[in-house]
Length: 264
View 1: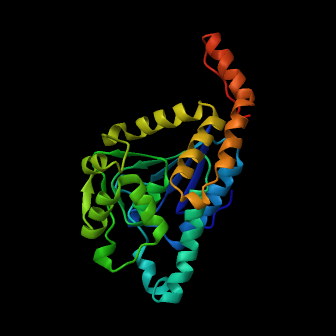
View 2: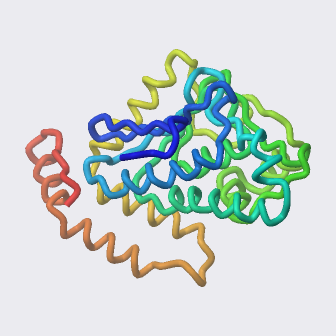
View 3: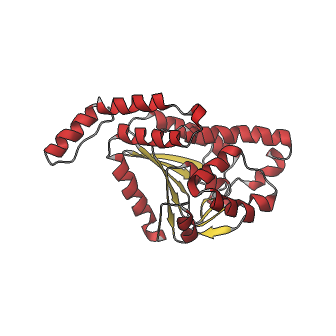
């Protein structure tokens, strides 16, 4: 795939797709071009049946993503109209992640703040090093956060912790993030990549249709009743039971061997 910037890297490794925010000089702050590249990457991974799980990480050891690239604010976010255009691009990258049907894991090492935390929250699992720091400093900058972003945060940590994060603008330790439910697991920095690979491989070798259906069902559960599509979920469940993989799973269980799932 051809990207518009070298500050985003996409690498395919077997069943795993890697997405690297490659701006370590700015603690992997995300520029407008990087957001546009994210759309290209996720659309490509969505079409590639060989990719079953995606891992997001930041280059270097200082940050996952430290938020938006503030150096662009003067030229690209200096008025309501400019902010609207910027938000359109940010919205496209957010939609690309929100509609991505495959599991996503955020591998968090270092700073994970502002838009970086929003990116991590858009993932399905978040594994962090014990030296990571989390926060949304919007209240210290006068920024406003869109409804969708705050709804995602509240869905993950609940209203009390969401308000603590937003009202104070503080940075929180990895252990505090774990207690909030913001991350799934905290490990040492040395163990981080190994732990994330373990998660990714375990997911990748499970039945893809079952995993996809589970993700879709959980996502629907957090939608308002008026837009919840239970018919789609019922059809996805039916497809699981009618699939080759369901037969393979049953036979493998009876034969006491590992199943080989093909996603059909």
